[in-house]
Amino acid sequence: MRISRAEAVLNYVLLGVFAVAALTPLVGVLLAAVTPQGEGRYGFQLPSRIALGNFATAWRDGGFSHYLLSSALVVLGVVALTTVLSVLAGFAFATLRFPGRRVLFYVFLLGLMVPLESFVIPLYYTLRGWGLTDTYWSLLFPQTAQSLAFGTFWMRTTFRAFPVSVLEAARLDGAADRVLLWRILVPSARPALTTMGLLIALWTWNEFLLPLVMISSETWRTAPLGLAFFQGQFTTQTSLLAAAATIIALPIVVLYLFLQRRFIAGMLAGAVKG
Image (cartoon, rainbow, N blue to C red; front, side, top):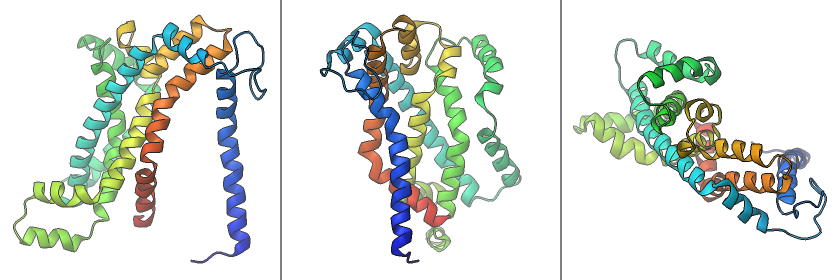
């Protein structure tokens, strides 16, 4: 479908407005992060000089090397486990026929509708009874369960869009289900898998409530939780807080920039298939 020149201009204007609205707070944080401590210029006022030492001070005083490592381990575990389980569940719901398939799929979708706040307290007591609080397992298992509903829905939709004739031909040639999944469907679904993995990584990295409830020892703190404790220690030092926030956000931003082409390809593929 072709659009007129006026419609194209309007689209770019709207996209520009949304881009400015999204980037404005980020610019304010970056300017505050490079403002010398005690200068009193924050937000959108240019600092008298660029104080990159704020990042080194925040890194050293906040102990963010350990917190970033903890978050990275949790993210890698959640993404890996969720991806494998979502691929298996999505394949089952998309291609296999078994009693109660539709009802069970709707039960999975309930995970998209139930907020974490509604069950985090009983979840805490359950995991404490199993001796899993103050460990990475108390973050890995619940966040995998949280992401599994979305992952199953995403992979089911992706697999259902695959040509049925190709699967039937493979079955006629004697291919087992595991061959259909890992040699035919999964390689063709790489853009969708990348998009799903990046979204899950983003959600897991930014999770704050679950680590706050499950983790009391500094050993297992994740980056957002470490930032909250850092804020409590340096409440009045805006430059250090902005530098620390930038440090915490940087890994996931770099990951997105590195995978943005595949992320957009996966989103567009889902839109076309839908």
